[in-house]
Image (cartoon, rainbow, N blue to C red; front, side, top):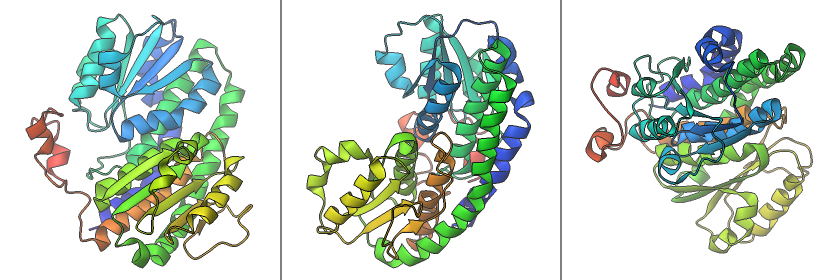
Length: 370
């Protein structure tokens, strides 16, 4: 049951390399349409994995362009956001392409006279009909509700869309972009080793993790998008209560709820919060024995069998592609151990019943094949 999701995890390096190699073609329509536009702010709107991709891409996009980048849920944008910068570009992401909330957000942007672009894996996506440009998310037909390579592909596509546009507008130069691309490729080259280590690690924690009914994911800085996505991915597949917190938010009250039936994953990227994360594990170890550290070896003096210690590249802009892998592996194999097929939603008709996606049997056909 886990095989299709695991295959997608393994395909991620190839997918990301393809997007980089084909970036000029993939981004051509987007660049041509907006290279002459005045842009000061970029909104990235989407739900779930698409929103998390915006969070993970934000630091790079802002560093490269000097524009303010605001990831936001589409309904919050449509119903509550007061846009003070009329030179705003709104990029709506929906991997399946049929999200009615993303459509609502794009329509709200159009009504306000803002620039709009849509990104989707689906060539006939509904969101493409509600934006000025369409960009294909070239990750292949990911027939699993719990997206893995789609998360990485969404981040990379966002980064390269805006990167190619910045080049065309003269905001940056080719040498600078080439330096970033080389860093991206270095991270991508490390993903197979991270996946291998994560699979071995899951084998060590599986028996301890299987009874979990309350799980928390903690992290910080550029890995915060991975915290949110890791919590969502494991929640979708293990189907138990899972939440993700920025570590400082966790310090401010969440710690009070920890007990022996709490299971915690820590995405401890390099930086000043890493030593505090290790100290947090020491403290919480007095209350729960279920602590799973995900980190590079530096500073970890006494790793346990519960720790996923991997030589991450620790790139502050691009290691988001790495740190999510262990959580995806937990989601994949944990679901299998629980007898859950992650490619089948708990209720295949949920979106139709609740009215959150437009399912027409054609554009959403890949879901029905899942």
